[in-house]
Length: 112
Length: 113
Image (cartoon, rainbow over all chains, first blue to last red; front, top):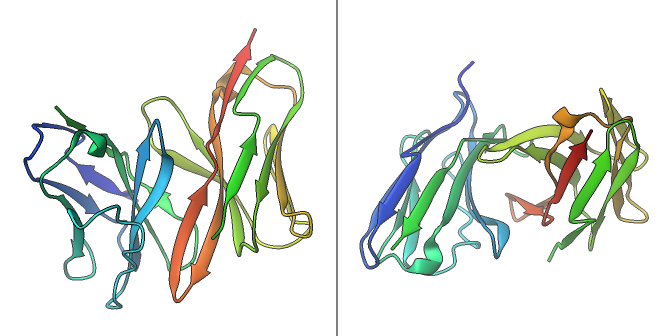
């Protein structure tokens, strides 16, 4: 079946602009995660959604980052007033709760 | 807070040789995962280890878990070039209903003829 999909695959933006990254999880997976991968910090957890429960936002690095998940499926990660240190690959994953997380191809964000 | 350390970070090995990648974690982790990442690609799940003494094998790769030592190993047998990739171990932290993966820094494996 279809895996996790993310769009866009690449995004180049100017410092100070807002960006939205999209994730479509595997159908039927109730849990959705966002991670960030950068050379300096490795792979970092950002946020976790499970069904209709309140999300775990403990990994978001600043209040410029936010995410929502509509209808228990598609998720959007929004970064406001982007900074150069936000440049990274943003990975989305989905799973049945607590089980193996399957990752999407990622969105490579470059902030100029 | 769960911390995960992998070593080595870089590994260059000849085809046909055996080697082991080590993954230490700092506190109790519910599960231990191994992922593979090819350059420019996403993460591919290899193994999930659930309990002490668990051993999983797929082809030339074998993963094991020792929860008392807080150690997982990924053993490579008779390496081939196709195994060249970056390998990550990750511990699952489940607290307050959240499930976060904490990753090691990865081991970049290069298998040379």
